[in-house]
Image (cartoon, rainbow, N blue to C red):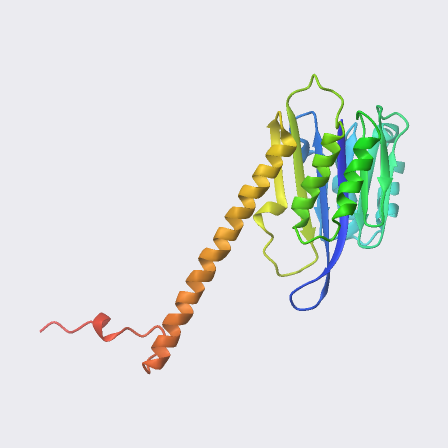
Length: 257
């Protein structure tokens, strides 16, 4: 019912420290995919789909947080799942990748593992959906655009290749989630987005992303300007020989006589 992509990217933060970001994006011809399939944390990204078992995603991320490698974590969960033949499960951690498609998934189904990503899908129009999703990500991997934007580009490529084949299901959805290993950072508003019910989910996800990104940049600009004003007032107060929060002569209260 779905196709999705999980990604790992290493980068250097403003202090010169090595960091990693993880992202997952998904779309399907059903509503509310963001509540079921994509999972991410500072330890990795996981997507659970086909006949969805949400616990595979939740516990997969939990196991990664406990220090298990992604292949060990997801294999263990599948081995304990009696319905594994109907599942698709894939993901990445800091060092590895894992992808699984059960023999009882509905065709076309399949997956692909790249050096830093995994893609999987089922009930698709064909293999091109997975291949084009992967190719779109590879073409701009570690690019200048935020990962959230590039994940949407990857979904759009898969959608253009045919996507989910159930054209009679008009109400669709899409979602993305991006996390990183930086301990003290404000995640941009556009790193956790969902379109829960739409006839054009990927296009709407892009519009939501662009609006959220614009809002985030506006907030940064607003508070940067306010901080600059506070610094200017502090500098002026220091030049006048008074404390920054000391009242000016015009503001000084006089005693009533």
